[in-house]
Amino acid sequence: MRIRRIGTLLVAAVISAACGNVTTEGEGGSRTDFVRCESTAECDQGACIAGECDPAIVPDQSAAAMSGRGCESGDDCGPAECDTLLGICVADCRDPSRSCAPPFVCMKKDSGYQCEVPEAPPACDGTPDGQAVPFMTGNEDGTGPALHWSASVGCIEVTYSPDMADAAEQIERAVLEWNDVACSELCLATPREEARPPDYRRGEARVHFMGGTFPEPEALMGTTVTWVWDTGRIINSVVSVTFDGVARSQLKVGNYLKEVGHAVGLSNTESRPSVMAIATPEEGELESLTALDREALCRLYGSEPYCM
Image (tube, rainbow, N blue to C red; front, side, top):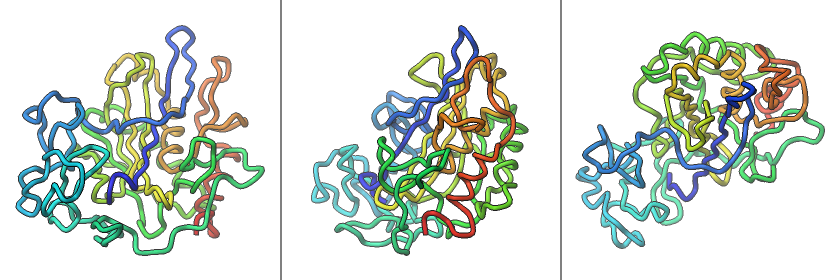
């Protein structure tokens, strides 16, 4: 799956030190699921690209002997393909190390090979009129395909890195509450510990929680959703949580409920009551889902899902 056909959206949760309220701000952003680096020698796996360890870059695989080198087009990469966004050669899904995770399969598309779900694009766009909690969409103005998990993925894995073990109970409670919405067909697996973040190039379907840092010092949480650009199908979602133990202790189950909501495709709302609403200092975060939250989830993932 070529990165030019993938979108990422970072939704950051910010807690004001002055008043303790939590707000959310949606913005285009780079991936937050990678370790910061200055050279490839600092990366346990992959290569150092644009200051981040990217585990998808495997320079020494035999099927992509030129992977990791600079390029302007596929002609520069031999058996690899040119990622024009990063400007480097990368292995495609024909390489065993980049094989696609089910239900994605390796398919030739646009003169290259990439991980694709072999089914027609979904017939969904934007958010239905009158719905209180909007869907995340491919465009900032709310238009474009609604971001959603494909039913063919089955039960979505949920993992957390070892540094998030102290929040395992809150993560499990948040996942269980979204999972228990009766009118929704969405399935989220019981969270388990996993150090490795999901590999978006393989189409690895997973929601992953991990420690992270943010450009804004007051930010405590942020969810990065990666999706296929022309269909809105979510590939994976990574929830980053501050490493600051004191600040992390301020987070409640409601904060994790909101981030899981983002991870499955729900956006912020001004409607109340809803865990997806931007809380004021007087309100604080809700600790359980409301009718508005359940309605939005069931519209997206119900028996007659919004994205067919």
